[in-house]
Structures are given as structure tokens and as C-alpha cells.
Amino acid sequence: MKDTKTEIVDLATNLILERGFNAFSYADIAKALQIKNAAVHYHFPTKEDLGVAVMKQQQSFVKTLIHNLKVQGVSEIGQLMALIDIYNGCVTNKLICALGSMGSDVLTLSERVQVEIKNDYVQVWEWVSQILEAGKEKNLFRFEGQASTKAAMILNNLMAGAIVARVLSPQHFKDVIAQMVAELLV
Amino acid sequence: MKDTKTEIVDLATNLILERGFNAFSYADIAKALQIKNAAVHYHFPTKEDLGVAVMKQQQSFVKTLIHNLKVQGVSEIGQLMALIDIYNGCVTNKLICALGSMGSDVLTLSERVQVEIKNDYVQVWEWVSQILEAGKEKNLFRFEGQASTKAAMILNNLMAGAIVARVLSPQHFKDVIAQMVAELLV
DNA sequence: TTTGAAACTTATTTAGTAGTAAGTAGGTTT
DNA sequence: AAACCTACTTACTACTAAATAAGTTTCAAA
Image (tube, rainbow over all chains, first blue to last red; front, side):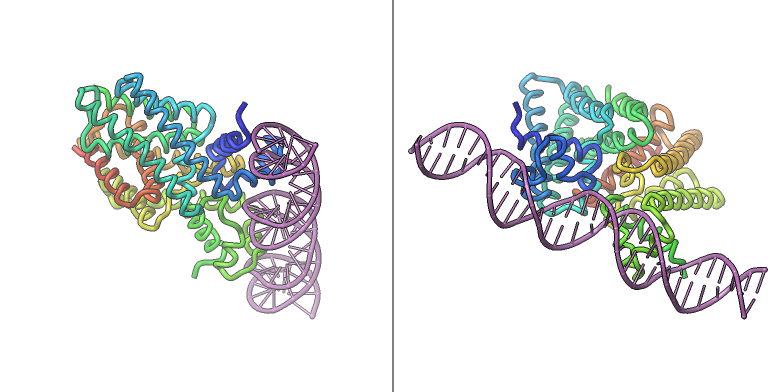
């Protein structure tokens, strides 16, 4: 069984992806875990601490994902699909991604949290840049311009796509991402 | 001179684009306008009312912009650049767009506000779709797939680009949008 | 068997939040 | 002149937020 600390981070993550950092409280977490407000503060003295923990856990998840995909020798196409699958999961559950949620709130957050949001973005951005670069070399992908710029464009479509999916519909996301992939594949 | 009601909406808009709907209060507005909290409630009884007013004002701005551009006979390229200029202005002022901000918070907002967010998105989406369709016909633009899908992709890049610009840098936005435009122009 | 740290609860504080009721100054209408 | 309206202020309610101090339980190691 997961320990309380991990459960708090998991729940906070879900609340952030659903409502945003400024729209959930320690009381929400305490209620869901059937503990008291102060117990959450025991593990994460300030909300800032909790925010940092959430973003670091995200980085750890991505690190593990990248590692597993490379160990399994998954192709560049497969790696891109794995990333898209994560966003499909978000959209299905009416969630947006951590980058979109925390990015929108970035100016209300402390320096420490801002740094972790940036680290999160850069980690995924560098990964996608590498996928594109290697995939182009192998003639799997076609695109104009720099791989890093194209990677940013792909992330933009995933991030904003997930946001818009909740405003319009999940289908809107699927259509856009399908077209994005079609343009990319040779 | 602008009346108080308009000033409240303008200020609320700025606060939403900077911090998000759930991260500003009536007190922020009252303080800035040197009036009392209750005076804001006089004009907008609930925060929901204020949210609706902000989104309707946005729609009105876009409607006027589209009208002016068409009256002046601005080309499809010029129209797209006008949209991009708005986002450049946002990025310069460390703001995100109303769609990105309110879209991120959509599940914390009432039905009435959600509808206006959707209306806002659809208005801009249809406009960009028309620009692309007409521009392609005139051999100004090149793109694969449906104009409406490509329009959504452009909006995704603008929306998420503005969000990421605050996390990374304004330059990151400019690079991505420059590449986006380059891919689009014949 | 004691001890001591980890993981809580209880109870409270401080500082906001949206929202409202009642009153008022100054202008407009009848 | 009386009645009314607009745009507020004053003073408040009810509630929620994050945060903390002090006390309690639990359980494993000495």
C-alpha cells in the first residue's frame, strides 16, 4: 500500500490537472484521504512544498518513461505515440497536463515552483527534440526547420489541445493530433 | 473617461490574463480603482457575472477587429498577422490569452461562463478557418488537411506558446511562431 | 520495558474570500 | 417639491484559506 505522503502527492497532482493549483485546498486532500488538514501540513509544511513535490514527481515519471522506452528499443514513432498516449489519457479523464495547468498559474507561484515547471518543460522538450532529430535521420519523420522548434510545436498542440478539449470536445483534440501526426510521418 | 463598470471589466481581464480567474479577488479590483469591495458587487453581483462580462467583451473586441480588417480589405496574410500581433502583445506583457487562462480553469467555472469561453474559442476558430481557406484558394498559404484543423493547430501554437513564453522566454514564442508562419506561407 | 521518533489529531490563529443589508450623496424625472 | 435612480460607502456575515502549537498514538529499536 502507498504511504500517505505519496497519496497526498498523487491526489494533489490530480487536483492540479483538474482544477489548477489555486483552486484546490489542503482540506480537499485531507477529506479525500480521511485525515486532518494538519496531517497534510505535517508532510508538506507549505503549499509551495507540495507544488514542488508534484512537479518533481512528474519529472521522475517522465524520466522513467524515457528510460523504459529506450531500454525496450522503441522506435521514434513509438516514442512519440507514447507521449501522445499520455495526453489521450488526460483528455479522456477531462484533465489537462501539468505543464498547461501550472504554466497558466506560473505568475502566482513562488520561484521554487517556477523552476520546477521550467525543468519539467525542458525535460519533455529535449526528449521530443531528440525523437524528431533521430526520426528524421532515419527517414521516419519529415518536417521543416529545426527539430527543437518542431518539438515545441508538437508540445504546443498537445498542451493547448488538452485545454481546448475540455472547452469543445475530446474529438477536437483527436482530430488535431491525428493531422499533426499525419504531417509528420513520411 | 471610461465609466467604472468598464474599468472593472478591463481590470478583471488583465488580472485573469496575468494570474487566472481563481487567483484574483474583488478586493484587488476595488483597491486598484480606489473604490470599495461592495461597489464592485454593485456592478457585478457575483464573480460569475464578472467572468461572463469579461468573455463577452473579448468577443466584442474580436468581432470589431474582424470587421475592421475586412472593411479595410486586409489580405489573409495580413489578417493572420493581426491575430499573431495580439499574441505578441500578450507575450510582451507577460500575459496569456483569455482562452488559455479561462480554458485552464474551465472545470471550476459555472455553466454560464463555460458557454462564453466556448463561444470565444469558436469565434476565433471560425475566423482563422476562413482566413486559411480563402488564403489557400488564393495560393497565399499551403497546408495539408482541412482548414479548420489547421486553424485549430495555429490557435494551439498561439495559446500554448504564450503560456510557455512565461515559463521559458518570449524568444521561445517568437521562434515557434516564425516557424509556423514559414511553413504556412507559399 | 523504556524511549523516542514518526505520524498523526485537536484546537486555534491569521488573513483572506464572496457576498449582503442598509444607508447616503447627488442627480434626474414627474 | 416629491419621488426616484445611480453609484456608491459603511459595516457586516458566513465561510474558507494556509499555517501552527501542543498534545496523542503507534510502533520499532535499545
